Length: 86
Image (tube, rainbow, N blue to C red):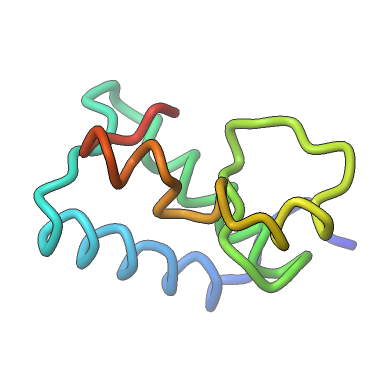
């Protein structure tokens, strides 16, 4: 498996982040480069497991984790606090 996400997944996550933040009033990290790394991590998880699992956490079993929904972007914390914690 490639260490780089597909361009299709990257573009999908860029559009998702842009539309979600615009629609919900949520904020992404103001630190330069952080949002791009989050998008790349989300895209990698799309390619690997088919879901945008938060890339900023460690999961012993990603496939098991997606069944709980808690850390699928936009994660519960992001929906409650209106900013990405990554």
